[in-house]
Length: 479
Image (cartoon, rainbow, N blue to C red; front, side):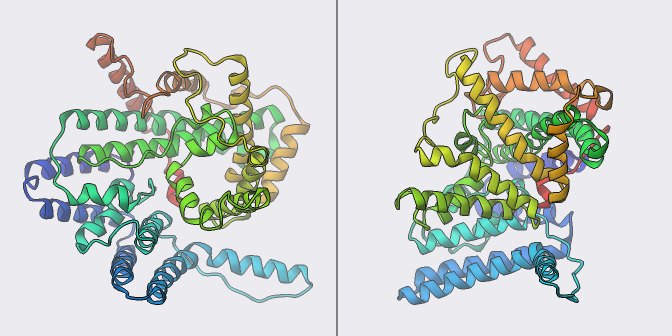
């Protein structure tokens, strides 16, 4: 069941009505209801993987209790290792088995050997990378004494499988979400209205922006040999907007859906394309994953405490692991490595925390220096996205080579020209709302109601116009 589907447009209101009108007076029943509909939501993809989700949930639930109850560090560590190894074992099998087999065979071929091997027709369970990291963060936090394990399995299972975040995040922390699950929730009209507005903007990002960009992106990347460098450059830029509209749009719908049920999820995007350097970009892009790697990998490796060499080493590790987390393909590893290279100057010069504020805060426009920084950062990110989008390193290499060696005027006849004014409108609204949690949170809030509602209805009309034309699956469902 997709967030941009007619099914979800029925599912969410039904859940909302029953949640508040039928079960609001009994927290245990209310949580059980949401857990049930979360499993129902997940079953729309493949009901068989419900058993894997339930097993992973039970494993981490009992591991947390055993870690807390153990009277020795050795026993605690044993239960931590069991949880980590089993979770990563499942993730590795379903997501990386064929990749490792094929890569090992390719290595043997380079050595002059003729390996005989077979791959498996493995279906990747949707959302496995996300709910695995939910569970691991919980076990790590219990082991490190940051939280006490919950004894209520329903509450814990709901933390792992809450349907707005189950498939593509954000990657939640038990310290943030579990307390909200464990305490009674009262309906808040303003919170619900805020949630609806965020859902509306998320749908606009996905349906109007991302899916429209996908038309040109798919055409260009699938036939890159036939186009000039100028056209390939436009294709790369359009993919930058596609993946941002797609993934941040999903996150907005997830956060908005959570607000309708009285739950605030972690913010996952903070206007990354207005960043002034790559370090700032990664503080604003897929925030829940970046912070996960920082807390559970970068800091345990030593973080920035061991001098320049350790900062460089640890930065490369988390970017390469982040790339590999995204998929079993060398293109993702190169994408991660490129971003590590791009961020190196600020790591070495210790300027990676120079831009912590909002760009041009309190001003209508950035100054020339800020505009140049934003443009360079966007182009660097777009260059790296070419590897992310390409199916093979061969395709990425020749795409980039042709982009730089055959620079001619883009062939705009390939594109639906309506996408360009839509992108201009999108960037304009995002810029106006960059100091808010999401772009239209306070748009026109001081204007007359007729203008506000005119704006909202305008977005809804655009959704209906484009909804059935170019529907695309969310990109991050494959991860």
